[in-house]
Length: 166
Length: 274
Image (cartoon, rainbow over all chains, first blue to last red):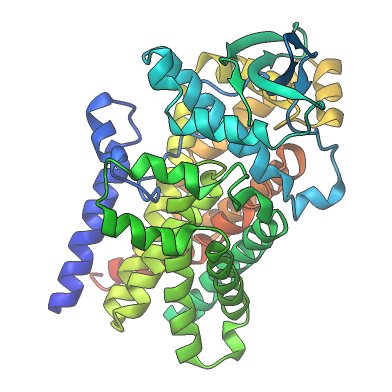
């Protein structure tokens, strides 16, 4: 074996070992994931042990002077099409919203409101809501996460602060 | 199943994955703009405390809009080259693998939201594959295949056992609710599940058994492994049809040539001692 081969083997063994240990959800392994900016440490649990069991929706409403509008869905629902088996551009947006929502929900338990407003997930969603269609003369906006299982009513999970828009 | 054939096949399936995922992003390029869901202006805030100004400036040049579009176009071109690698000069294939990995890393780094397991597997396979290819060493290429095969086995085993230890999955409840969601569900299957209450239980246990025992197919090898790989194709096809997880089939297919090669290589090694 050459020096290159030895280095490559050691590298792969190290990566494999980290991949195995990080499948166990332990806090002490979070430090490894904190520096994994590209996602090279895999998570292979896939919908387990706690799978997605309900839909999560992002709503927003406008404040026109001191009155608020009804809650509106932030992204349109795409109906199923056969082409989705091969190509589905809207999927990335849906997943991004869900990922940001999940991250914000996790943080909302431990962060105070001021700190939460500065998180990437909160700002990402706020920025996204700002670009939605708004009523004329809207002065402020607010967003809401809700969950709905097929046999239940829609339940709010998180309500943001009211943010003035320029 | 020789090393170059495996390389061609891995590159082919990775290329298809790259073609689909990159074209989807390019069509929805507004997501990547300053006003989009994946705005770099906001995502970079996460790195303010981690990187110095010079490093942030460097990432701004790569990840800002519209520069990120150039990265995506390079990734798209590399995907085409990898799909057609069997008919193209080797040096072109060599550079396309490297650029595919670099662009994959940039996109994965930049897009903190919206990635899934298919993206992760494709990134890991392309990284390992690239290391094997650029080392220009037959042994290193073989080791990269072993690593890719390992990741595939780890993925299936972890997915299976995580479900095995979940009461929701063992009872069939997990699948019942999952299929009823708009995000991952399918109306036709949802109605079938409502008509037949045993169907989610059966489907759950087929999924759990197949995934948990996938490594057994590998250990036995030969036609049993081939059966397992064909089963895997149908499993991912089912996920694409009923859960719209359409890129998983390509990123996981990219591991199958390595899986098959590694098993044959192990047989050859064992036979050499007899």
